[in-house]
Image (cartoon, rainbow, N blue to C red; front, side, top):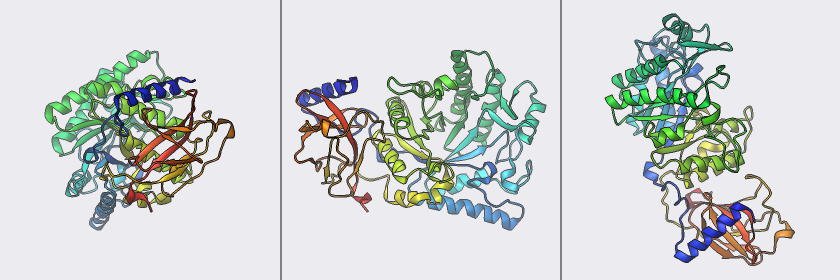
Length: 474
């Protein structure tokens, strides 16, 4: 018997002995719909999300503003409550700053004002709609070596900028980097009623050349985070501080990050920042599928006790030019993240509003305020398959239909009991199946894992089960 099977059986024994039935996700962060983060990254670099019109005349300013309000109206209709607006781009900004020049995305000309304050306008429009606006600050990268943002910083702080390839980066090993970035963040919160500061790329570049140990590297990045935290909270304690770490925090006991993780690869100790109170929220970029998503999402949830975590979902992969994912992959990730007590954050706004593969339409019925306790009476047809398949290869059963069949594997059909587990691995109940039919009428809406359980105590993972809320059964 493998370790996970043994763990599940021990959990089941404890559950039966204590006569308790565990609701999905109860071992992790409790699910509170009124507190759920429903966010979107809204990028301004190159106008890839907004703006599409350069503010070169008064009429163009009006069009540029209208583009944003139209986007916010559409986001509000799908219950987005947090907008992460790219405010510092690449050593350039979208508001009048004493530290850095205007980015060219607004006026069409780097260093030139668009004739109004886009950040103030965006804050006001978000607040009118009951949405939070967090200033998304790109931290370490400062753009192409000879572009305006990087060039001006090199002239002002010649020892602070390091060249890697044709890009410039603030050097995280220089103490002045923490001072400079905290100046930027403090300027924003002094002058604007933002709800949060969202730090992007608060890490070492993966191409960094140096002899610093990983432990020292983590301390260097944490020094920057701590300085920003202290100066932000000193002025406005209620402003939320967050970041977007790599989607895999570190290697897990049973799942490798394949050399690409936050803590070890780029010295980004985000879970410690949340635990120690240096961050209020995390938005890990879990832009992966199957075994590269679900175990790592569980890991983030298990370390979210001291703050909020929203799973960053790579919806851009739905685009045929990017990855051509099927919409069901994102639907599963939405349901699993909710069951784990995680919020959701979509990368990025364009792919959401463009309704790529029907995602926007789905989110209009995936109401983030749905009640927890309603049940859905359904039956699902279950046939045994091997446990030697990764997440995603195991059949996925949806309760949209009265019964759903999955391919059989006859060598493991010796079980007459099915163990129902939460996605976090907690056994919820056992059920007897007859003629490959399983009654799931007493299960709450959510995501489950089904295991066969034979008389010898052997288990095999046979399927993932999704019980939909009635509002989603269309």
